[in-house]
Length: 136
Image (tube, rainbow, N blue to C red; front, side):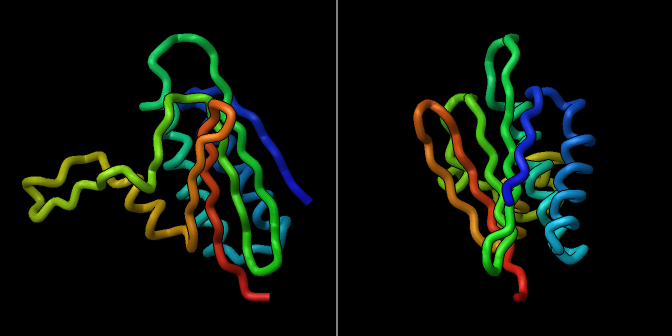
């Protein structure tokens, strides 16, 4: 069964979206650690879309789909923001605390937390798919 939620591209939507993702993941039988990983990745992904994706003041929506497949929790995030491939983006690797800034770690967290991440641009939409392995 697939669970879908659409939210406005606004920072204020992050907290309710986060709670919904965790609630759905728990209902699908995911362990707490997987719920926390899914929450982190969705929050980071959606925050990046909100902060960096649109260059206008019109209303945009972000779609989030959560489903369980054999051996995995799968989350798809879809938006109409400008094209951005988070897998192809360069992630800064600071070599000291002086070089490290307070932001810029979201893509790295997503790449290292999800067991698999894929991206495609289809019909003018960004589609990010996150997979989290589950023991059967």
